[in-house]
Length: 379
Image (cartoon, rainbow, N blue to C red; front, side, top):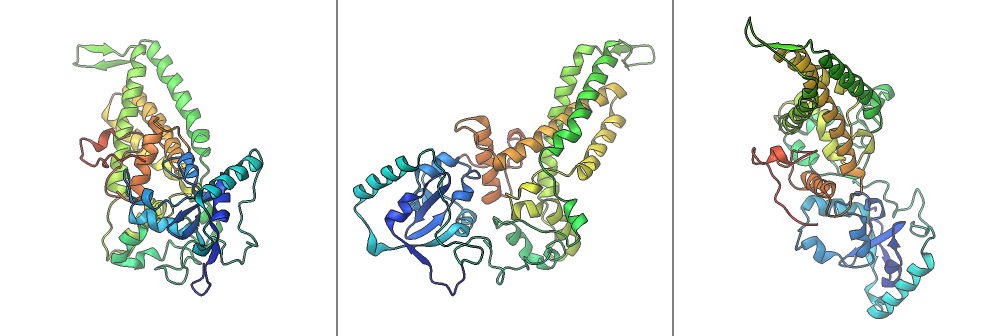
């Protein structure tokens, strides 16, 4: 909304009407927010927001049980659409009755979620959730070559998330190479996982694979050891996943080093700046192949051939599951109380408040021995 434009005023009755998945509004004091686009992303689930639709959520923002971070409050402002007309307040009971009636009339029907007279040029259209004139970078241009100039301001800027797609490069082909739909991860890697699993098991079943203990003594690797080695490789990947996320993706580049800041932004900073950019939630296969290749090389040089290959295929499967879970944690709607629900809440807190902890994605296991666990809070 342009600073020069007076905020639109809504009556309590108007706000109360927007209580469905197609149009969900909430109040923060007298400020009105259209959070429809945020329903699927909310870590507490869309049902939690729908229960509070048309109501003042000030108390929920302050807690208990969960006090929302400054980043969460800043994120909320992207959905601001106007002010509540305090002169038109109606009796609460009457409002609730009208709201029930409105809900019954619209049940099973798709409602119009747009503000009246909203169009592409409307000041109430949230097509630009960041102030293009006041931000530290020019969002009208590719960001890859701009962020390095932020210097000491980069770390604070990159950890203030926005709900806006990012363009990294001006070259269309280069830009396209940084984007990947989630389904390409299983399409590219799962056939390799299945083939190598079959190859490892059938090779071990021949009984010719042995580990030389001494020059005169060796141990046969039984075919039934494959599931154990597979799971061990998966477990090993979970540790690598933690280390990469913590020590590479969350390195703090020196404020004076343009190239390291740029590298950090390309690797992971852009994901923290725009955490719900669906085209950049999984690794492009080309980039992932470098990590996969290094993983294979280390295992192949460290362990006997078949053991190394069994560990590798388990780790590769773990990587595929990791990328799928990461995507789901951003766009999925897990059932409240489930394991995935707790993981989603944990990961969202990592994005919005605890960027220096909570590095586990598929599991929080490694956060415990390394003392990077995010404090447990309910949503």
